[in-house]
Image (cartoon, rainbow, N blue to C red):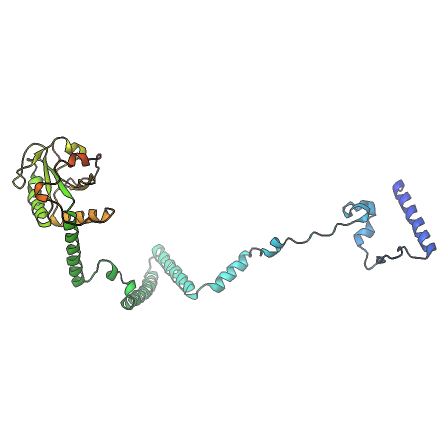
Length: 332
């Protein structure tokens, strides 16, 4: 039995078609463009197979919304390349030398693994021969590197850093020592040294003449501080400790500090027995690290001990350092 709504709809459609044919055979109002009548070739097979009330997606009164225009941003964004296409593109742009290098490494590793698992004469010989070829390739690379360094001085580290040739090393060290001595002499104009020691310390007795000679050579003033009230032949006028060693955190002797009374700054030079070369290197390094550059010489009366009375005010807190127990003596 057919649906009542289907019967009514079919009857209405038949009546409307008959009326239009009687009026002149045209269903197009005056002034309107006639629509193409769907034929068997142009009709939608799905529309023919199903009635209109079953095609709910077409819209109300057979109205179909026009497709939305494409988004310009989405259209401009290229689709991500497929993995296979990306691999092919990378292979086309890859240098053939990289493929040769990877193949060489893979072949060498393969021969080594085979020889490790089955160390027969044939496997070992194959691995050793191929390894020799790889080493020859590396040697050619090293020789070409050296030749290029000869012609490109900006790539030669020996010209910008410490040289490696024996004659150049001697000249470099001599110039470096000259620069360090000038730096320390300039430093002596406004800085002094605090020397903390004990009279029964064997390392202090060995270090005292070195420090005395170094200070005289570079014009530095030394303030000796004795922890036990004893003296040293090189510093007979040493002052007894009045708590300064504790504020300096002098946990081992001999201890040496660089001070600038005008700015009330104290820097640790080191602990233990040090040579003149060690003192020169450490003091010049401290001078380079100080901000503001080195002050000029002149106007300082070192004979009147300009550091006296300024050390206590220059102590600004404890100083921590690493200790080398092989060259210093810790009091019991």
